[in-house]
Every structure is written in C-alpha cells, then in structure tokens.
Length: 87
Length: 360
Picture: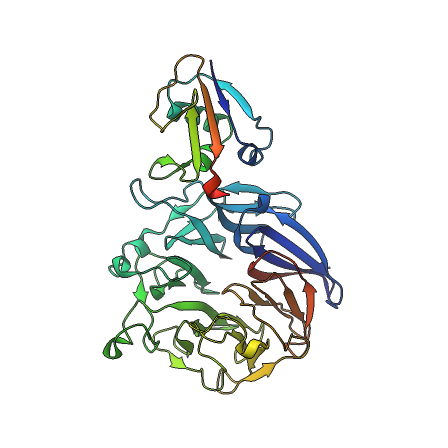
C-alpha cells in the first residue's frame, strides 16, 4: 500500500477527501488515477492536458522530485505540494 | 414587481453576491465563493436558476463552478475543458454565456467550449480552432483570450465571439464554420496602409442591442463602433467621447439606442478615468451623441480602471446600471445612470458584474 499526501487547498475542493490517502499504485500517474477514481475531477486539478503535472504544483516521491512517470516502490510516500510560484 | 435583485461579482479572489430589493437602496454582501479562486465571470441561467462562475487557479487550472442554490453551495468541473494532448493547456475560463439550454465558455488560450448538461461536461467547438486565421491571433495585455460570447436570442445556430486579439467572428451553423466580422474597425498598431484588416483587431467588449440581434456595439482598443448588420460592417461612434479607449459596454434592457460606456484616458496614458474624474458615458441615440454621467461618482483622484466584463444593467424600471473597479469598489445607479452610489468597497479587483432579477 502506498501513501499520498494532499495539500489542504486541493483536499478542500473535494468534500470528504482526506489529506492522507492510502492506495495501491506503481507510479505517480497510477496514483493520480486512483485519486480520480475516488474523487472524480481530482486528476484535472493535479495534471494539465499536456499531459503533465500542473506548472505550479510539485510532486515528491520519498522526498525526491518526481514526474508523472516516476515509479512508486511498495510503501512509497507521494507528496503533492502547491508551489510557491502559484501562490 | 421584483422581489430580489442579485449582483454577481467576479473578482481576483473569488465570487461575491450582493442582494437588494426592487428599490435597490440597501445592499447586503455574501462571499467570497469558489474557494477564493480568481473568477473572471459569474452569470445566472434564468431558465434553471443556477449560477455559473468561470475562472482559473494558478495551482489547479481552469474550472467552471456551479451553484444550484444562489451561492449557498458550489461544485466545480473542468471535464472536457481541455485541448488536445501536446497543445498549450487551458489556463483559465474567461467568459460564460447561457442560451437555448447551452452553456458556452470562452477560455485562454482563445477557444470556445459548450456544455449541454449545465456545466458538468464540456466539448470543444472545433470549428473556431480550425479557422485559418487562428495562427495569426496574438495575445493582448490580458493574454490570448476569448472573452466575448453573444448568442442569437432566437436562432441557436447563430453566435458571435470576441477574441483579443483576433477580432469578432460569427457562425451561422452552430459553430462548424466561422467568418470574421471586423470590417470598419481600426487597428492602430499596424502600418498606415494595414489598419483595417479582415481580422486581428483588439476587440475589448461586444454587446447586442435588446430586441435587435443585428444591432451590435463594440468597445475596441482602437475606437468605439456600432454595426447595424450583425457585424458585417462597423461605423465609428467615438465622436463626442473623451477617449477612444476603454473596456466595458452595457446595453439598456429595453431601448436599443441606449448604451453605457466607461472610457479610460488612453492605452498609453495610464488607463484610468479621464482627468482622474469618474464618469459613465451614455448615448440615447445609438452613439450619435454622448452624455457624461457623474453625479455621485468621485471627481477627484479617480485613478481606477474598469475591466471589460465589469459593467452591467438590470431589467427593472428604471434600469439599474452597475460597475466594479480595479480598486474593488462597486458603484450602482437605480436611475439609468443619472445618480450613483458606492455600494461596496475594499473588494478584490473586480473582473465582472452581472445581474439577476428574481420575481415574487
């Protein structure tokens, strides 16, 4: 089981969504698909149509900057952060 | 007799709603809504009672927010509000319009989307994207935006859009094909012999006269214009105005010859009220003559601007006129512009103002 940590400003957009989500995924893209399955529309908030992680968001996997294609090891922690540049 | 009137105000930090009764003497304020996202335009669908707010957040992208209960609760969606993979993604929603059961959204970079389910899912109107002039559209100061949406009141197949800077385009077949409608509008930012091109003009605001779908007015970056033939040809009506530059225009709810404008002092002069004295300019004869309306507006140190969607009228008798400023002040007139009051101040920069009248 992998763990996804969401920024408060994102979780607030989806009533009932917690800041911490445990799900099974082997990549960042798969984790985002898992979020979309639980809260339809969340993938659009994290990714643009390029497709890419939105310009003013950042994702870290186990503390390292990650792209959509980055793998998740079993038990990985994926942190979604709002970037200073977008605030 | 109207029981309630709502002012729908889009700002850089969320949407707000002001409410009054038919007398329009006292106003209450609610908001901010939409999680304080920048809201470029908030409108009401009189047929459903829903509110729709279009905007975009730097972190989370574009969305259309919808409220089924006059602002008490909101949902958001951007399903289908996207270009093809690899194209520049949509940054924000700029303008909304609803008619004939279809909600249209104009976006940045310039494009047109439509929703037939009340803003839950959108589809791209490909015909406009495929217009051969599209590669030549250039971003203005506000970006490459589709900000003007004019549905025909009785013919769902007809629609006009305004693009900065691309100009005005019209479709007669529901969006499959489009024709530029800019003849007679000036492009001062071009060599002298190229100032009246087929497209590329910087239209700032496009409005339609009540009951006369072929009678259009536009405030342009370079002049003020009127068209009596649905935009096929335009005539300058800027004589008598203090400036050829401004953003918003608002029509009267019943009189096709009455129009309200807010000219600014000039595109290279600061873009604030001429001589720092605020005035709404009104014509009663389709732009032949103009009258400055100043009673109650600041006549000293008025260094604010008013954005393209930030002026509106209501349909009461006498018509109300409203505008919001870049400094977050909202001014209201309950007598067609004869006198004015500031009904809200200290709001964020105001992007749009619309009205909704609710009957008993």
